[in-house]
Image 1: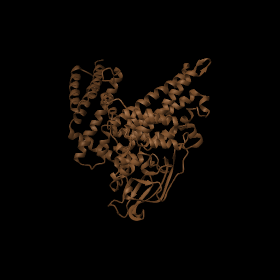
Image 2 (image 1 turned 180 degrees about the vertical axis):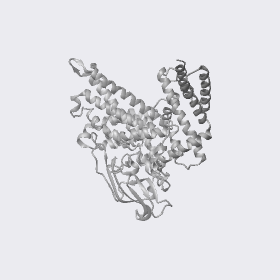
Image 3 (image 1 turned 90 degrees about the vertical axis):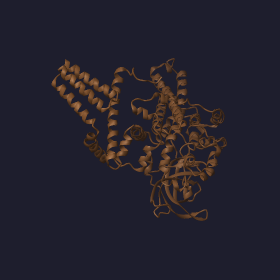
Image 4 (image 1 turned 45 degrees about the horizontal axis):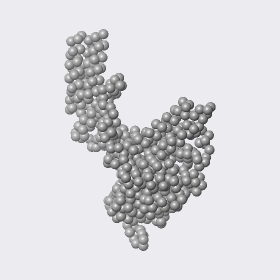
Length: 575
């Protein structure tokens, strides 16, 4: 019995030391003292042997020189062999954006004050007036049924209104004629417009997301900004961004489109430029775009601009009327006939000045894109998902109150209450998540992993909400008509699931892949060290980081156990 009590005490001691993140030397001393007490107490020999072994192991681990030479160095060499080399594009993707509160989630001790310290999302008087005025006026102008099922085009009076009121310049600074609205205003506007369907939402959302406008603001030369931004803000230029192709979807870095630096004719003059061949598809606004933002791989075999031959992914601007560009055909997306189509280019020649940011940005396209993608994922798709879930909530709760079966409103049936509750809960979560994350952008964050989490879960909740709404409406929802607010949302939700990184990829590669490396306090640095030259300094740092990682894991395991047993009554919680 005494031995069992001491064994339990040893387990408790180990848990407490791990919970408190005690240094290895402290743990060794504590176990040494406990071993002496156990021997004096007369416990069984096997327990004394176990305690002596544990004390010896902890004592050895506390000596850094022994630990480094016999544990860390062999482990480092093995880790270096099995870890694939990170390409430059992979490293840029991992490094993209900032680590926000997602880092706290991995810490095991999240700082709730950090999460709750963000100011509440608010709108300026100008932004609120824009929503109350032009935004609602635009909604009243749109006939979703007519666009989706009759004309497949946006009426000219609507596009003229959009351009006149500056909808396409929400992200463009006022000095260039834009509205310069905050991210909260952008997501609010797109959420309201989302109730009219994807056609209008995409027509306005795409120019205000990843594309020529945002890339020019962040990376363009002053000359490029002065020329294009005022035209983009007023709708004199309609932008699209061509990244996806037949052989490059979510794995955008594998794009086969190439541009060769050479001399050619441009506006009657022989200039140094790029001859590009490309094949793009699924490009939103391509059928009507006048300015194409193009991602391609730049090569300079004759060293006309530098010593490098293969520069890698580069972003450039191509006017629609450039010779060799084939544009105007349309795809037909399911559920919503928004403007989307292919773009092809055969021996398209553009001057070097058309590279976004000039020649200095040759080969920096992927870095530019991944740094902008996190912002787009926080705004456009969550806004559309919010519109969908809100619409399903408002319509379905009203219908369930009015529709009766057996003389009773169907909302009284528990089988209906379950999906109704799910719709309402999803609507609340999506709305809160997109507003809080949009506010983080205002605070200067670029949350790459949270933006992927937001995109994935918002679109998945929107999908489930439309399924639940369809189930509750029954026959009313499966008959098409201009009063059916469920059918188009139901049939078009796979679009949101697929774009800007298909959810199956977003979940596995970005949330768990990038999240597990970028947001973790130690994993990314361990990977970086494994790609460095093996020397004494590297081994020393790897030893420090690795054993911090081990301690971190043990601490979190102990905290999980203790909190689970105590109901977390003794730890700080959000209020």
